[in-house]
Image (cartoon, rainbow, N blue to C red; front, side):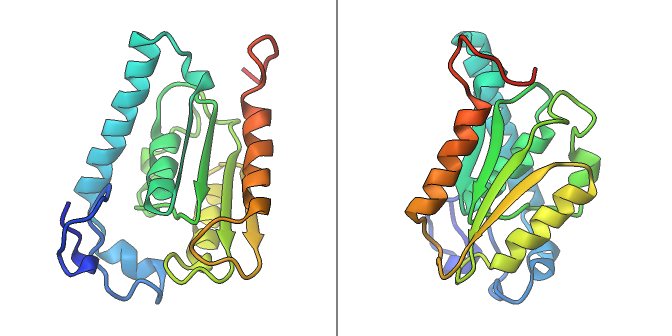
Length: 184
């Protein structure tokens, strides 16, 4: 996909990012978001989950949506809008896209209303500002979601072992062995 912020060159991307002043504020990004592209990618993720549940017989409650950076952003918007029970939602160095529309799109009173979201972010991230992560956490909490937000001092737009350990703990809580159960 051609990405505006990348001088219009093609690169792997879930949706276009147009704002070239990304570090100024999340509000700058909100003004120029590719809403159509975000929702189209969200719908693709929903279809992939549906395929896994229908074709492979995997219960949606055993599926976790997560990702890093733009993938984490898409995991958040896809997870909070998915109509069936999920196993979890996580975002590493990501943000909540179209957070001004999150309340109207969210399924907070649906089957995932008790699902905690795991978010992790480095305090020195030069690509996706740590403040974007905090703003996204607050936006999610303001519409009723439970968010476990972890900050990692000095971490840039990457991952560190402590973050992966924290994610592993979250996943172990959300996806216990099949003979055990998680809040249904």
